[in-house]
Image (cartoon, chains in turn yellow, blue):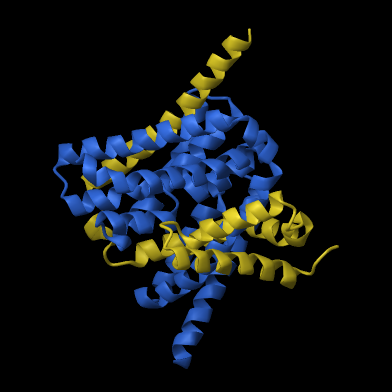
Length: 121
Length: 229
């Protein structure tokens, strides 16, 4: 069964709302969107939700995800507090910690894969 | 009221137009530095400055796009589901990689903040910066940081990771698909997951999982941090 665009989006919006409702009911320290994603994921795994119901709408959204980041960046440059906060020492912290995070993950995973390959031999 | 509505819808149309123009340029020339994320942002910022759009007006535009972003987060369940059997097989690798990377990021923030003598409020806004935006905001307010400051830090660090990450990984000879996807997802969250989808399905799923796992990890660990200080 294939659903129209509108219904596909309504299902996704429904899961988002469900996530928000659960977060506020049980005061979970996670954002509603993430809870909604986990719920939809569980729904897909348990076959309560058929992937065909939402596939078109979700792949459309993920294809144009970049569009949704552009307003954030534009808003950043328009905001008046932008230059007050951004000083050279903070910029250094941001750059160094981003690289630490990036390389920390990459090298740990590579090291783990190597270790596993050696074990397999 | 009507004028505000008109202004906001004008800004929305402008934002979407900038994106599609940039996408067309990118599809025509296929150059990495022509990524719509950069070209559209530059184009949009210059247009907004040209039309003297006020900060508050654009904040309302941002609110609408933020709702769409939340919906996109829900859609991320689909790639996660498609790659589930693959992810289940590799869960150890994912957890070890993401936890080490996130921990290293937080440790580097701590040590550098001590070096530069930053105040506690700034530190509290910095700690969650490598987590996806909505979660970062909750963590920052829990720690006593400023939400608006955290937004700036999250976006800037994601931009830094996306700009230098792929080249840095290539330069250092990291070829493993999982390592690339996980690294991008941990350090640049949504932007990184999006970038790793360009490499392929496997990298994309890894990026997505890394984003979710690092967010969950920090959301659990952060309430403990004040006791450690």
